[in-house]
Length: 498
Image 1 (tube, rainbow, N blue to C red):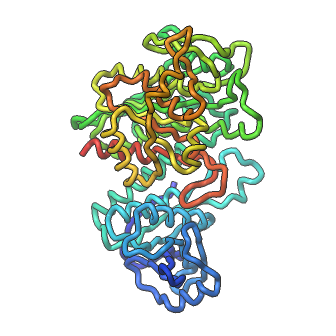
Image 2: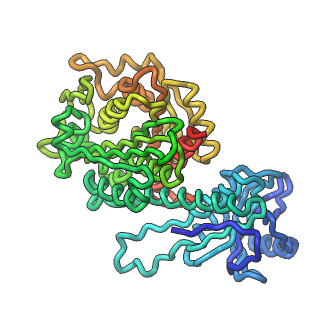
Image 3: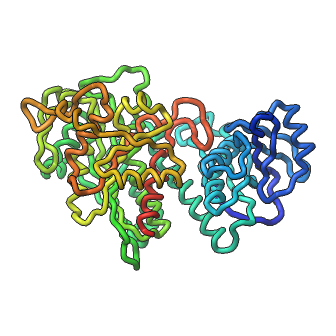
């Protein structure tokens, strides 16, 4: 993990990162170096010779004078004040391109403490490498930045240390989420997920910082009536689990208590509704929601945020075998509702239903959030970079959307139309796990709503597309697991503690 610090002292690194933008309507380049004064006239001439445009995600490197390299990262159109997310992405893009260098100083136009934090986060998030399963090619992989310095006179002393520490935590646990997603199903199954996250809890401080973990085995799940998790996982040789992390702040009273519930299908073949082979390899990412909620609980504990969190990860492999759940089987969700399994590939909602009901047994919750790579319809509706938000409480949903302006993650509110609800009716059970095909993302949200008390504020986050990047890297986002939703969950906890 990269070490992050903030300083306004002399540049000691041999790599300097600054911004470059395009003046609106003129096409001329404009260098944005924050608190640092540069000879911009000569540099702009060089950038023009190299064909630089200043567009977002563009990174141009030239030899420096006082430093070995000056790296220009695109900010898009020149602004008097750049958004935090623009700065976060620019810093992340530069950090990605600097793999193979040990350290760099970032001097970008951050005009507020929040902007400085965004630059620090972006640089940390862009410094990521997943090489755990490389053999003969491991030695040729370029290591990410080891030390990141944010050049800023805006924050100093204790505030600078706090901002840097926060950015390090965000980077570290985003990368935990990414690592879990990128780990292949040969090495990540329900049991090993529990072990890996338990190790992360222990490394973070465990009970000493208010964290506790528990795991329900398949035999316990079966005896206690968790029909959704058992029904999905019974076709696999790797039995299902229900993993729980509780965080109770030490020495202070929690301002609020949230439940975070994350879909944890460690691999999804579709079961007896077998998916096409093309693209199935990406289904190792079907546990992205579980990874995000677990990492968020740990991060909030490390940051000592005075909010209580119950993180629940219902974990299963959806496999094909003579034990797999069949179309038209009826299962009983924890709490007693029965579901006709019309499509075994609509499995995420089944494990989430169990966990949502279990989470509400706490009784003292202020709100509940679930995170899931739930539907392909999300990708059709919103693409691969914007996740969906559905809710039973518009005020709470609006609060979450405000939080995303801080986290920088892209979400969009979607409705839960009551006219689609009858399509979930079953002639033989309380409801079916599939309904109207058109609007399938909304139907899935309506299914989950059936398992949440009307009076409890709830949002459902469908992250199916943004959770796993199969295209080119961009900004601070690598290929593979992205860690989406984690930052927003952390910011939700921080906001709840204010």
